[in-house]
Image 1 (cartoon, rainbow, N blue to C red):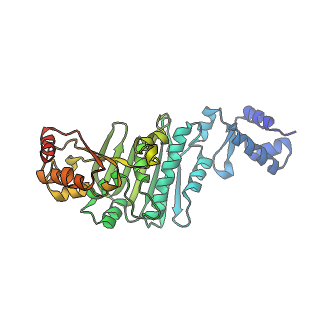
Image 2: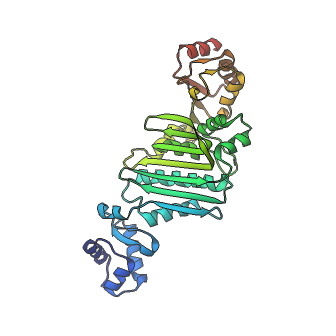
Image 3: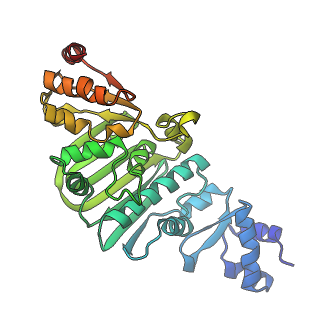
Length: 341
């Protein structure tokens, strides 16, 4: 008689089995086998790994054997009636990449992958999207590649910004979206905070958010049509979705609304001086959406009076309820801020 325990015993004996193996061993229908293995999977006793036509069941506790089935996957997807959650489930079912990882890491991967694939589906205008996912001994990485308009170009055009650097700055703020009726603009921001390393490549720029350092880098690259987003997290990461959201959300009185952000002004990417009101106005675009803003002046050696006045007097007076927090100022920058105040 076939029972769930007899299936577990068979897997212990053979190491791994297919649905057909179970059916043949006990001379029962595949329908009955599928019912029992579904219950065992839901109980967390066994996992299904491998492609559908060669999928095998292994014990969830047998991590060494399960790892033999873990592999990378590349999917070439037509951008037509795609559902990001179904693609994530397909990767989970066909590869075993997410076997025996902490639930907090799994939830981060699920959130980040579906957000990034959804962005490509809705924003890229690309006919094809390529998804890759792989696991090493220590980390899991996924990448989403499209051949569309390019994320930096899209933001620059929609908000009529001066250039790619201004578009990158807007993306880092966290509430920028080119489709406000469908998206909040928070997906990339929060995904970049959840990764160990998060990279956006588009046309001639690469944005790297390295949360292990932590630091942000903007570099030139060989031109890449469209956008490629890469996300890497250590399997043993202690991050959680809740901790990330809590860092950038108000308290209960604000209904935990996303209302804080950190603006990283890395002027070695632009030069080492911020002088004009126009530069200041580019920094403050969309900041009215937040209640608390940290302005990081690392590597900025001097700012002009016009720049400081526009942000810390003119803009602040227009938005008295928003808290501006300048950090990492040297004595030159600090002097100019104090002077306009």
